[in-house]
Length: 48
Image (cartoon, rainbow, N blue to C red; front, side):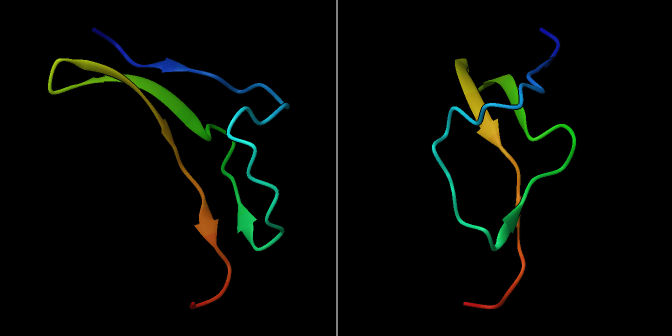
């Protein structure tokens, strides 16, 4: 099964932290260990 990209402007994750930036392809729906999963990708701009 190939990954499905979702490049929607609305962020369904609800993350509003301004210190997290998201790449152009910020979420993928993938089959992981037999479970269809939505994976979110972002970068934290500081060290917690």
